[in-house]
Length: 418
Image 1 (tube, rainbow, N blue to C red):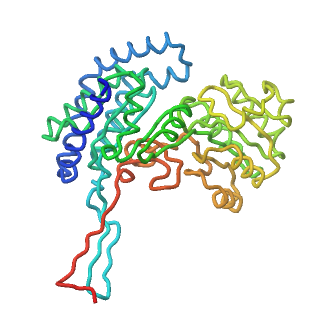
Image 2: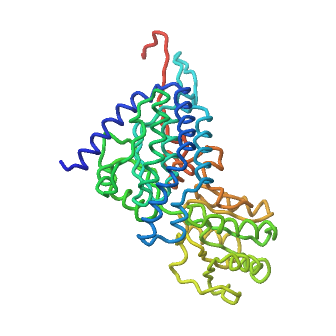
Image 3: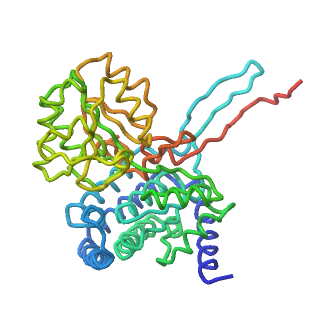
């Protein structure tokens, strides 16, 4: 057995032991651990920023894009957001033990379906060190132990944040092994996690297409995954111009390196030379490269799109754009090129919006608002472990509630089956 195999096996055994204890941990203890972790993160912000500087230097040497460097960056404002997220998760109701449904049978049995922890969650992620805090907090809130494997780029930042989470667990009297961080950049650790059947109950990959595709292809344990965030914004003929210009610009440029950033703009053919031209001009003025189809290439600043630009997650100041005949053509385009993550429609026509919502099956559909709201914190979940685009168990933002399963509690009174 290799050293990494031994390390991962030992981590798995400790995680299972911690999960058994967390399954019945008091809500007050979990809340106290997260509040203490939040305080520890803020107190250690200087050390975290120092650790992040080492990661940024590593990223520059590695040649990361500006968008990826932005994902990696931690400053005092972003650390304050991590603290806020930890406290928000702490304040949420504990999902463990909640009744999902209850009913009585004619035979006298009383049946309850209640939430229960999944057990041990493995989270594999790239670049964004805040995922360390989000994933650790949400798994703990749901009564799960978690094994975190951060990206090589965020190695030092993740370790500094993880130390604060352990401080919180220790302060609340909960097992420190409830939140573990893989202590190596070696990719062999990822391979081991994917094989830990009977130890890890679910794997959550959070990263680019290469990582998620690898996990889905090689994992022997169940996976919650989103493959890509190929988010579309369709501007309808009945769109409000002021709303449309503000929303499209925000959807693309607020943060280009997140999975909720708009990657494709669809314009109704009747607005191309009016509102559409204004929207394109706004994007170009903001430094966005607009790669347009034939119907848009006459507009200033538009460069011709290649076929592979549609259905592509740029994660950069680049957007594909196309003209469509109507909402049905927009729906057809999204079905062809989308990743079932998030799509937005900008329209004042209720029937058109209903058609868009009814005929698309992406995890998140939005009307007259930015795709950048595709985020667990913005959904009131405090944080998220990722956006799931599959159709089993969890879809959309995966918060604490989505990190539970359920069991049936059946009560009788000497009841026997004839």
